[in-house]
Image 1 (cartoon, rainbow, N blue to C red):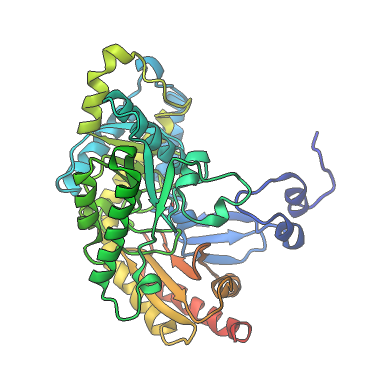
Image 2 (image 1 turned 90 degrees about the vertical axis):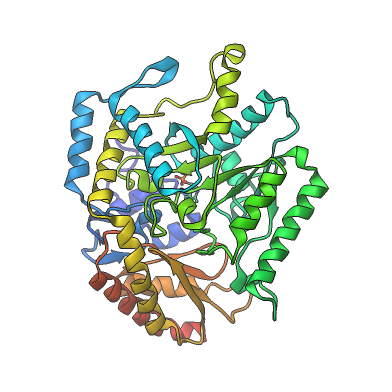
Amino acid sequence: MNEHTNLSLAQMDQMSLFHPVTSISDLQKNGPSIYTAAEGVTITRDTGATLLDMGAGLWCVNVGYGRKELVQAGAEAMQQLSFQHFFGGASAEPTIRLADRLLGLFRDTVPGSDMARVFFGNSGSDANDTAVKLVNYYNNLRGKPAKKKIIAREGAYHGLTLASGSLTGIKSYHTAFDMPLDNVLHTSCPHYFAFGKDGESEAAYTDRLITELEDMIAYEGADTIGAFIAEPVMGTGGVFLPPEGYFEKLQDVLDRHDILLIADEVITGFGRTGNWFGSGTYGLRPDIVSLAKGLTSAYFPMSASIISTRMWEVFENASDEMGVVMHGFTYSGHPVGAAIALANLDIMERENLAGRSATLGPVLLEALRTRVGDSPFVGDIRGIGLMAAVEFTGFPQGAAPHKIVARHATVAGVLTRALPYLPVTSFSPPLSVTEAEIIEAADRYARALKAATPELE
Ligand code: PLP
């Protein structure tokens, strides 16, 4: 028996669903947007309207919607072994093969990396929680129990569980939740367009950020800092590309102070930046890599944490003394998720989707620049691979021009993401998107900007 009868689906939603990252009062006023189907890059609403999904869901449907191959891989895996846990050494073939394949992919595409093992979870958030716990575990095992603080960045998005949400550097996610936890520090957001000073070169801006980081480490004491966490390109913050020389200098500081690097590749992994991993694009040498989203193209909730050899050796050497590693989840390594991930990687390889992202990225940027680049409301258009951003400028603090345009964009038939930190709209279509779909989406976005103009003036 249902709780509510004789209600429309939208009303039932309003009366029964607690939506993530949604205003309760907006939902009561406006109701939900209900989607019913999707194919390729196009999603369909219950009204029958179709939209080009320039967000790939939440940056996650990398191979596009409706892939029968993934449906089949999932169905076959479910028929064969619908569940297997991995506690106490229990195992299953798809997961073993996926771990090995991820290690090989990372080794082949991220020069200088030295990774040893893969741990599986269910979401980007829990992957980052795993990272925090493993930093603690590592430093406790090697006799450095004070070396636990994690440095993240303002504007970062690392998830919304208690630990990962604390790493997230966007205040609105912390309000009234008693976050962040006090072992987390935030250093400045690296975004030259908004935060570089007048007359400051990009290289000088990078140096200022690195000096600030060194000062923070000196103030806190390097023996209290366990790790630095970074998205190779900050996604939800606003598609912030690292300023010139940033990661090279950062890596040097971390090495000098024996601080681990956690690369949060939940968005940048699996082709988004035009390479398999953002670590390859920007020359990172991480100790932990958090992956989710594109791992299965969101056909199954699954995350992976790749762990470096130097961490693994500490874990392995302490094993007799420590006994069981008391970390893991019921669904860690789920064989159905692993089978889907393997089929997803097959598609990515066969269709060269990372290469496609590199080729189509400039097409997307050019399409946006020629259509909305001249608008007095637009300050910057940037991107790498198939992650791009339009940043609005000249509005008072707290104004949300990007949200107004996004509303019009939905009417014009294109889904974009109006982001929560700065007035930025992101474009991150499935990597299978065609050139024609990119042009059409940019046309629709330009129409939306025009329609929104009276509200922006
Ligand atoms: N890390 C990054 C970089 C993300 O963009 C996200 C989600 O958008 C997460 C972590 C959290 O992932 P999830 O929502 O699967 O917990």
